[in-house]
Image (tube, rainbow, N blue to C red):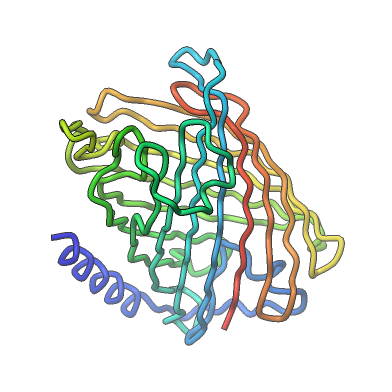
Length: 306
């Protein structure tokens, strides 16, 4: 059933992408990829944009529904995301692609780097491919090339969200829309502001725990997740940028009787290694939350443009 849905949605996104081409072009001059081809802007026809992003979140604190924080045994959640997009519009208005997520999680006080053991120890660890998301990214307004939307349909590839207390990933479908916008501050390219609003509508079966310790359905089904973020970047040179950012995560109950929120602040940097390849590193500190885990996130990613 999940495979059939994947083929239908992928075909729909490709059809939408091919039919949505337009006449506007965005010819950036000078600078580098990290300076000109921001997350808001799209690649041209025939180009391929590949991103490999890795996130390690480790927590030793838990906030209850009132925001009160207590200590807890360490839990670790590693997510490796591979995005691949292909430009189908000569005017940089549409790209189509897919997003794959691989996860490795450990609980029970295991060390943060145990996620890279991939040992699958029962009751403390799980790892594997968890979802695939056919996607289309487009510029909706002809004269606003620095505003874009990415629409994805996330299809889980796992059989159970929980197994003997170990959470893996959401076992439910997600309709995701991300809105990207950036602007330069002043007359130069030294300072940039970037805004990202991620919206996720989660649906599927309700979460049910089985006698064998596994689960069916998802804790997040019948909910809406909103993740706004603001990033301030400084470019001392066209090949290097440093940034600070703040993000908020809000899960809104639409019928599953569960809500949570948390807020993170962070810093990071990007460097253009070659004309086609750049690297980025980010650190986030989850400062507050309600009914959620709190900790730190370490991120590193590569982006290659063909």
